[in-house]
Image 1 (cartoon, helix red, strand yellow):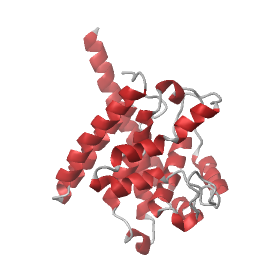
Image 2 (cartoon, rainbow, N blue to C red; image 1 turned 60 degrees about the horizontal axis):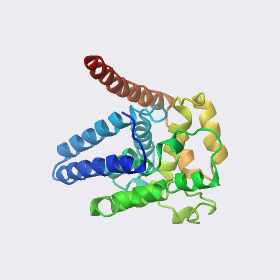
Image 3 (cartoon, rainbow, N blue to C red; image 1 turned 180 degrees about the horizontal axis):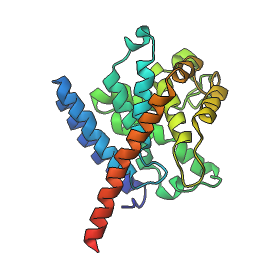
Amino acid sequence: MIYDGPKLMLLFGIILIIISIVIFIYSISARRKEAYGIKALEMIIGAIESDDPNLNGHSLYVRRIVLLLYDNLPINYKLEMKRRELEYAALLIDIGRFGVPRDILDNHGKLNQEEKNVISRHPEMAVKILSPVKPFEKIAMWIKYQHERVDGRGKYKLYRDDIPIQSKMLAVADTFAAITMSRTYRVPYNYDEALAELRMASGHQLDEEIVGYFCNIPIKDIENALEDVKDQMKYFHDAKRSIDNRGE
């Protein structure tokens, strides 16, 4: 399936959010149902991202990484947030892309200024989709500020502690996932190369402390997370091929 234009992509985004909102509200009554809610949203996101070779499980991997990062935080930071909300934020991290024309998303050459402006607005699109629903108000803000630079030179000029810690965590997880997953236009970084990139970006783009906690995560946990995501995406690709074969 190929989405033709921003209106259709936005429609898919709205449908996705409506479904996830219902799941979220239903899931808050019991821990077991919460797990079902996350699983259902993960299946929806995975199915959508399986159609884009340059996503292909990206949000699922961001979720795995941000949870590993959460597990490695000091207890005082853990008390400031809810693990389940982080999961929703990670899975919905790219929901704003539904408002970006496909031809811009697929353009891996040099973008003109107008195209750059459109791309830069995708977190704002996520806010428009998410924030009207009360359970997602905080999540919308975390996604909005995930691209802020800790040196204060980002779009919203927030500086260090003005940026929510959840946004900083999403930024590190999103960056690591983006550079270590396969893309049609480049070879993925290996683990050591990716850590070197994170360290280079820490202190001005990424939060130094969060990068430090991330670097303490055992490499085996990171590798297992990626393999799990690959297995999940294989399921979607196999299902899609099966459907295509039936249509022939």
